[in-house]
Length: 146
Image (cartoon, rainbow, N blue to C red; front, side):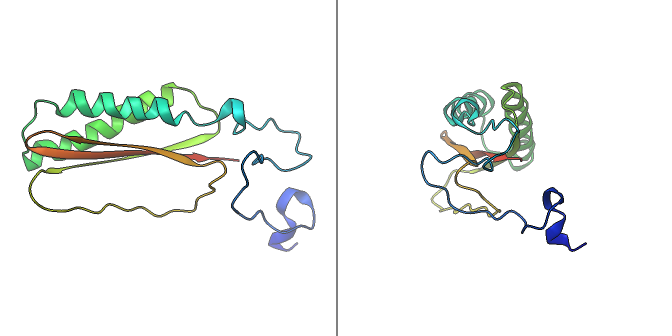
């Protein structure tokens, strides 16, 4: 049996990612499974952004930049954010958290990420924090898992 015939036990091509129009469901037509990425099960981006804001503020508000402790703080922030986002119990989403902490100076910084993305169901939240000594950028990616 060819690999493209293995999908759902029949001769059809493997699923393709594509841009979806507004209001279009990410579920396959005729699918009997409950699609939780629809309006009732969307990733709560606003709630996640609030979690990011709270965690960054509480961890870094009074902190001065020091390379070792700030490296550990980035890891701790990422773990705390991931635990709180998972506690929201959003079904069928994989959670990826990335946190960066750096010294605030007169430098510029560009952060980018790249992955396979379905704009109809995948989403992210991001937050930037600054104090007099450091900056932090944290992002949470919610990737819908079929």
